[in-house]
Image (cartoon, rainbow, N blue to C red; front, side):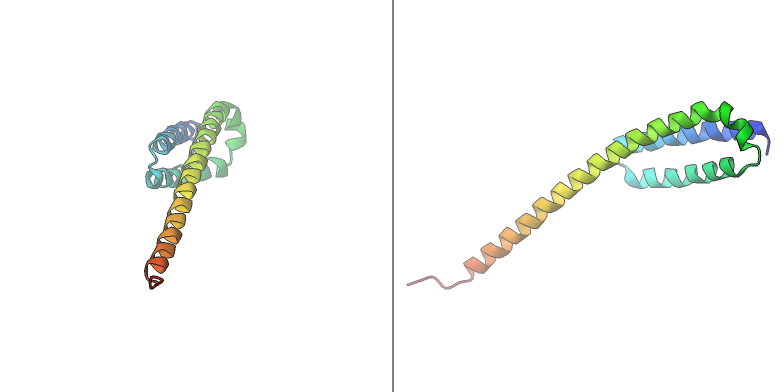
Length: 111
């Protein structure tokens, strides 16, 4: 693999990271995950190459962009997770209330 290929793959990693961020903004987490798998393959190829250390200065800007995109994606993911946990808590509370109501409504009225 030539150094130019590492450079090209690093650019592809940035593009995939941007797509992942776009998916995170749209809460399309399955697409996010699929794209992350593609990106991981490229990153593994890049960082397992024997001349990656000589290429690091040339791809450092790309890797910083990836880190920036990832940080924003993580924030969006954490926000989405918090929202889902809140919704789940509300559902559980409502299920408990319905159960209590059903128990009370099945009791014989006092005379």
